[in-house]
Length: 80
Image (cartoon, rainbow, N blue to C red; front, side, top):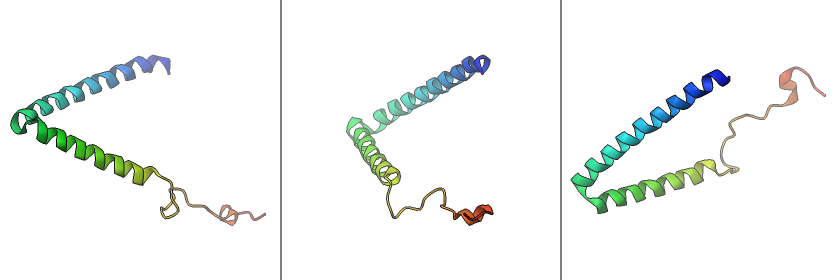
């Protein structure tokens, strides 16, 4: 509904701002503690792992189980 759309948009923007502020503060603390090279290496490694996981989990393949099983028409009580 149109009336709830502005409330949802405001809640989304507030949550994004809150998470961004927390991430910025955490990054600042980590950069001060461990230095730029270690943090950037960790970010690059985590990005590579996430990319591989996305590739493995989102690529359709024959070996993966399907989320929706294929049922025979007789399972619905009628046979053609």
